[in-house]
Length: 238
Image (tube, rainbow, N blue to C red; front, side, top):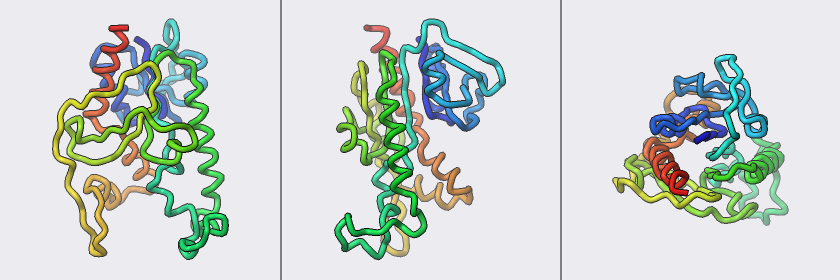
């Protein structure tokens, strides 16, 4: 089965499918960090979809035979997630009607960025591949597109962490939890604000803001394994 993991540089999901013997490839504008550039198309996902392949990170051109059977896509979520809503409007205008609020002074182009991100997401929904899954955190696409078919958490699949993840599915079943564990350690700041420790560990890791976004967006291993095992089984059964 030819499987494209779009917008994935970590190769977490790609490796999970590869471990089951599937012909899986990741694709992203960034070089992969998963250690397998021979499985990574470096470039725009839509070109890889329409051509059935393209230029690998190794510099070799490769194309799958018969086209793509399945796609799991992770559209960029920075401007779509509810967690970024506080950066949309001026903090001094929080008590004003939305129509009267000014843009955030640090991010004056946030509205345009969100519009572009939503447009990209909607383009992904139009991809003509038999089985597709689109993954994103809870955000505005539940309103702009439609409600997700399923919302999952890492703690349902063996990873002690909380991170609500929405799935929009086409010709794929809902994921069945594989290993219910604790919901993860919570970090409490001096202000009293609470957040997941895995999240704050990334924030205080000393890497750049761009690297923090990349690390936060990675799929947890348990979810990746469940996707590979359960959706491969579905494809074989069908």
